[in-house]
Image 1 (tube, rainbow, N blue to C red):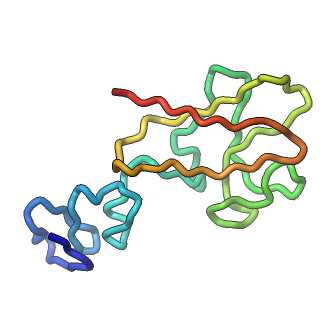
Image 2 (image 1 turned 180 degrees about the horizontal axis):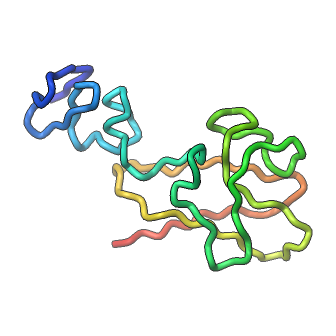
Length: 148
């Protein structure tokens, strides 16, 4: 059974379906799958897996396992930080970053960790943007811990 762009009166979704804020109906299997079935974001709401950093850190924080502090900032024309972010595509968009300093040593690590994410769909993807200044060098590694 497939309901596409179906506007239902409040509380009249078919059995086993949930209602979008705009009155449409969706199956719970379509929730948190990164596809806006409702066309108003209802089915993708409260999935705990998206952060643009425009409203803070969304649970991301510096780890106590290193000596570095991640900062929340905006674009910079000095070349150390990106001139703009990927969300707003201007110098006012926010992102987290590390300042490149001459006191770092080879092998130093800067960890950042998130809060626990809710399970989404079987085809879940993690997408992130990064910028490495020509004034700094390093490697990016992504570590994922799965709780069973």
